[in-house]
Length: 328
Image 1: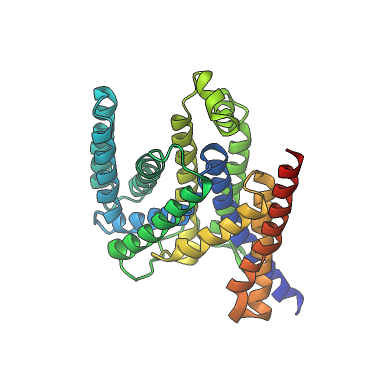
Image 2: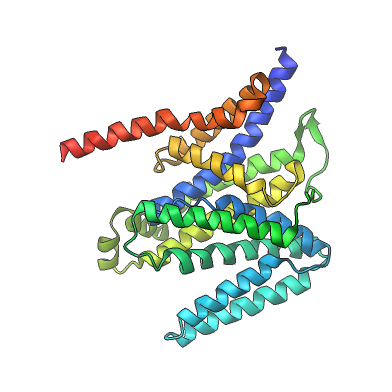
């Protein structure tokens, strides 16, 4: 392997690692607050660029109708609180109006796509996870995997099997193999990590951490864990939506793009113990480095080899859990 090839592999690993890291951060954030492993985060990321492409072409995406349906069901569930129900209906009307205005206009289409993903993410949490108040991590995981499969199938129904490549926000290359658009992705990853660090030092961030540590204690202190969960899912959905919009010009957008990205981010989050943001980010880079070099030496087995990384992490977690049970 010469130096040029090594540089390309490292750049590829860096780009993929940043994306896996963003999704892993989103998973750890949601899990820390709600105990939900948000496996469909990859599908939420996929919905953003595909909705953007359809809005640019002057068409209303199927994700808009799905989001509106979810908001209507949510509003029906909140019928005892007329004010909140009215807010949800107004939000749905605003989303529909924004999508109508965004047709053919790139800046508005960006905004509308992101708003769609936010509405879908939060309403999905409200409709499918909040009713399982006493659910275990396993039952949440089963629900999350079911939603992951359903959203991917809906992506195929809404957008078809074709791949789309939206125009990048920044054109040109810094050097061969490194575009300005990729730098934009790296910059967003740094901003997201810094933003999360600062957010958890605010009063609202500490309230979210309180929900993660002790839901009953948080409730006794006047903090509603349900609202904490919605905020965490909204932050995660926003990160996934922006990441999808920035990534699509580099890798194409298609209904299946979120599947492997979500699973590899899941591996990274597991490597971080689903608890540590820095370890999850480092796990993401480990996954991407391993993937990049195995794709060179054993491309036929690269996907399987990446998931082999789960084994030592799960073995370590198993030993750690037994040790804690022994101490108790």
